[in-house]
Length: 246
Image (cartoon, rainbow, N blue to C red):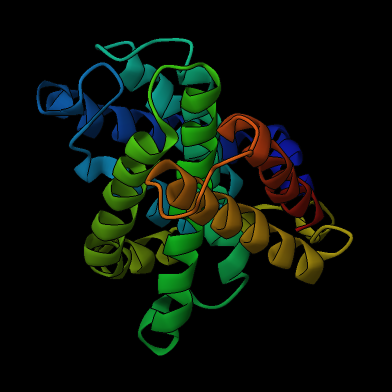
């Protein structure tokens, strides 16, 4: 995870962060008038940006997605839940690019199953983080917001992602803006246990998302269980530990 912090020493990565945030916010804001859950989330075709820009720009895409979402929240959905929205959208970009690794983006057709899994992991991580926060703050049931976030993220990225990558990747490569080329090898080394980190990220994000949905929708009996936020907290922590190990 070291590249997440060390990227701020590179002026080009900072510019890419600002670019990502600006594009994400610019696409988010016009759709604020089409709410899915008033005051919390809306129709978001812009949700393809975190995945695509995360794969292209790595940590700059992740920070840009987080900041862009926060900027968008100032136009009608800003609340205490925006803190969790910030980190949820960070994960929506961070987890996919970590799972993708250093595979050539120009060969995405040959790695389509992995791309789909990367999108799903990012969508579940984002949904778990935001759903956990909203549930803990008693703003809305986990099952409602988490399902909306997951569907919004996954479907849009799966449909639009490959086409947008096919359009942008040749240009990013030609202009030498791929994050793996911009950062020094020392600054983009993987974490101490990337394979274990990926396993923990899947267990935390996937397990927390599915367990939260199961309990929230009554598919799993909740008799005698503690509050849902208390149940989900260890799985959120497991996901975050995985992120630090990647």
